[in-house]
Length: 333
Image (cartoon, rainbow, N blue to C red):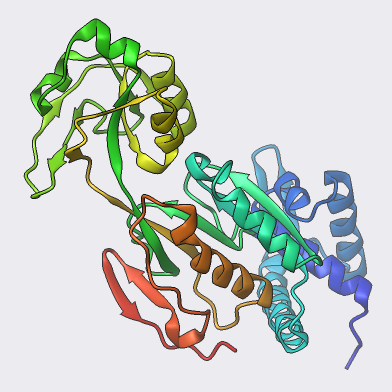
């Protein structure tokens, strides 16, 4: 049986990444190299095999018939190698390599960055890539290890650990309230100009009181933002009132820059999860991150309902299907 050299393994890994990414440029970005380098490595592999693996055209790339067969073999080989290397790293118990984390912009640039700082302090061999994004996470395509998402998780292929719940409240700049008069009940909110987050329901809000009574209030947004930080800044400038996560504006309320409107009413709470793909093997770098953020989340989010911390073990994980939490059995070490 012919030996596979380290150089061949690198070429095989590049080929698998090109196919999974769907383009040379995305593969180069994921491999932290240049597009010419990726193209050259593919040509080297094709020359070594004496066959064409990919068809190139102005419309993109596609696998040749031989390339399809080779890709199935190469992908299996690459996954088995990754699995074995992860086991070796777990045995040494020293986290190393690159950890990619996607976090919501409303939390990732202030509160959650403390998690990043502590993680790197105790794991100096790790390189941490921290991406702020509100877009759906492409775990495989972008080689993301885990993400923090403010929503109900419906993908049955993902593992989700609940960190708490985000509570939304109505806030407004004092100057805006002085111009539009007192707000004494939910119906008074409709007379205010509004800052809203871009979603299909941006023209209505549903405040509820402490007893669970819900009111529908129609609003007319003057400004629609695609992220929490932008909505917060717009509210601070007096563009309009906003229903926004309480932990994003707690400092502004304390300083008097924003007023908590109708404190006996709030928006529906939304769960916040740490999410990562289901797998038989979890690298030590991910397990360490899961443990750290699970233990720190009650301190970082004073407005979140604390969730008891349990260390990362296979039997402690949950598979989330819609709003249902099911125990997940796994053979992961």
